[in-house]
Image 1 (cartoon, rainbow, N blue to C red):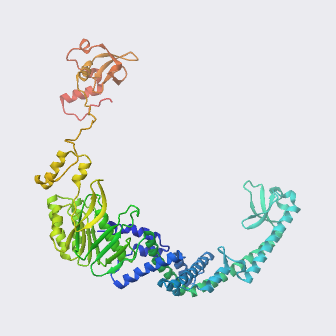
Image 2: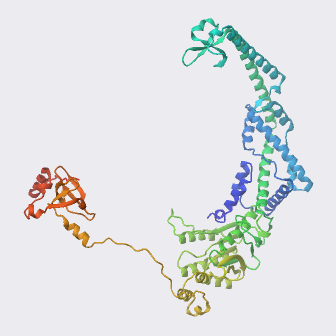
Image 3: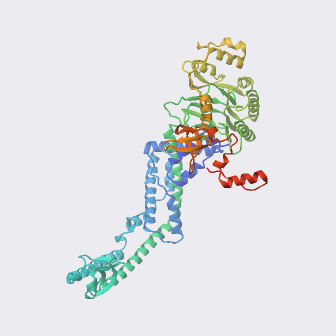
Length: 633
């Protein structure tokens, strides 16, 4: 029994989850359930109201996903060095904390209770400023320290000297050069020298072209600067690591404040997601009671279009604890009971409900049986699955539960289904729970109308337009309106009178006034089935050629002998001089009949069987043999 799925609360959670920013808040939404403590539920509902008010007055809060920061903080606390990218992520989160503090501070002017969460946030300004000053664009900035700036200036100077020296060599040995540019090969600055001038340029061969005609040589003068450059880069790397380790140590020192910030952002994200959902649904804060009373004014299903949804007026608990709802198919019975339970469950999860006003009692369990629940894997029929689910509900229900059941007693013999429906209602009544059920059985309506703590309700239906009005009237039993619908759709009077008599007896027939003037159903023109004709033509074809007939085969005009007569497709088999062929009878003409060529008892196997087959047949006539006669295809 998956009540959340049956009443579509799982879909509400999906919408709700998309309004959250952090992974932890999304996970909390996925696992959200009803609160059973009245004080805790009251706090959750106040948080939802406060978050909605703050969003409406101050706009969307500047929340940020902090999932990655937890891993970064663990790295810092272990003493490992953070990368510039990771430090920038820390700086961004601290900036988001600072913006969130400012946002919440502005909420204090409206005396919003959520605004005081600002005091639990620490922007750790010193760490944020140091990271922002020393890390830029995913790298350690030149001005992070005086030493790093000096080293990088020397590196640029050294690289420029290397380039000047290489260009000087190229100008001096211009005739030896394969091209007029210098290039880096394997990290070394080289000049392109023609192979035949290898020994005219002093230096080390670093690489060669794919054809081998050009050698890339590092001039001797450049090599001296290369060694100096490597020393400078080692110094640069050491200084960068010193800066990164210093910043990492600062982040690790602030780990306590950072972890509290992360937890607070995730908590506020969950709270504000409830406020966003309330705004999107146009919902209100419900009143909560423990007196087993539910009152909904102008309630609607939050997944339905507001423009077409008909508001629901509902009340239970004061006059009756159980309501049996009847009415026409597609009249909104199922939507109505889903709307009531969904509103109650959302309220008890700390969410606002899509109503104009709502007074909702707390329930210790939400139990439902909606849909056929058919399980093909378990080989359960609709009725079996239905009863299995109902029995599970009855095992769990008590006086503080809320139960809804759709089409009670359906899926089996009507008389027996009606009896089971009444038995289930009696058990629900004895449990003391609040319950809503829908049914079509008139006996169940009668039972509900005569039983203490129970009453009927109906979904209204416009007989003129054949459309439901989706209004619930509590205290009145409804009817399915099946006869009126069938009448308006053209069912003949005779059929309608038969239906009424079968359902309510002959005396009830005169109470119905049908519009239909049709006496019987007008038959439509239908397609006809064409059977295979087994007439004279088929019989004549089968007799046209016999085994042994000599025939002329067209268009080649060759003579052959019929070995297999015509079949039902008009095809026969003919023995030609070198092979047997299948051919349509229209391409064959009788040359000489078999009766004129062979005696009456002539053995045609002499003509059509191979020597080997005839020998095997001869052996079969005399004794047992394991040989097999093989026919040519």
